Image (cartoon, rainbow, N blue to C red; front, side, top):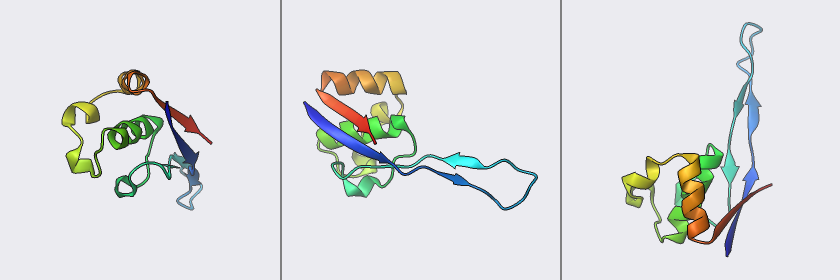
Length: 89
């Protein structure tokens, strides 16, 4: 089993006015995935990055479209089948 640990670096963004609510900007980072992927912007992206890294892809352009079109549940199942565990801190 390979484990990829993503650090939750999410933050609240405020545009500085009272008329708008603050917005949660999700951001996750992992030292074990390819650094060329950058930050993941959802838990779904975390699974995609872990799967892509495990499959040997180093750049977004290399990841097959079928993976990028999958939803969270599908990616979690593929990760489980590939014996990948995704953890969040």
